[in-house]
Length: 255
View 1 (cartoon, rainbow, N blue to C red):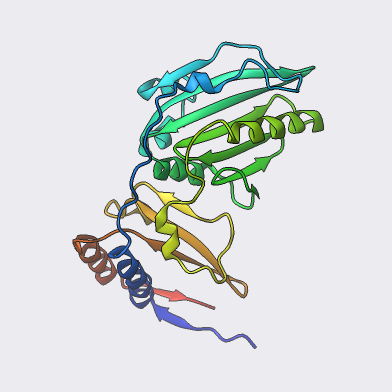
View 2: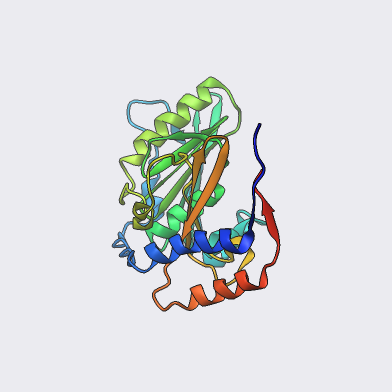
């Protein structure tokens, strides 16, 4: 018979944050990648060599606050990660058409952060750039300070093949590192759940003092454990968290 165990939430939260503090003080900051001089529009070929894929529109570029004109209703999240600009164009092969978007951020860390926030749970993770995922008639990956998104107008096999070809070609075109931000190197690997590395720009767990938080999930039997890390070289975040724990008097049933 499975036993029930109840522990004070103050003990649970303190234990989690002890991990956060330990690795937070020793991680250091990742250096921003040197920004290339190439304009985003120059990454959009008129045709893809040895294919029938051709661009059928001009390249449109949206800079800074003008992102609202392109993705009205979702731009706030992008700006949390220091979005700079996006370029977009339509491509066609026969009767199949897709949209290719290239989003540019100020650093590779923020590019991965945005990517990690828009990645659906349990999505089909692929090895492209740093990481990518495939949906039905869509594909997205992050490389350096760029997030590339491919969206088909239909969900046919032909459209998916067109997307795959374009994504593989574009991975060799856009510059940038193909490793995750250094903060994830501080986490243990055993029992980690793939595709759960996330960077939260602000208000992690609803707390305004928890920003730039790295998160990873782990599987233990039938349970999922979430570990997180944030830099706290001054100790100020720990004091705020300790006060939050002190103010919390509820118990957690871990049955």
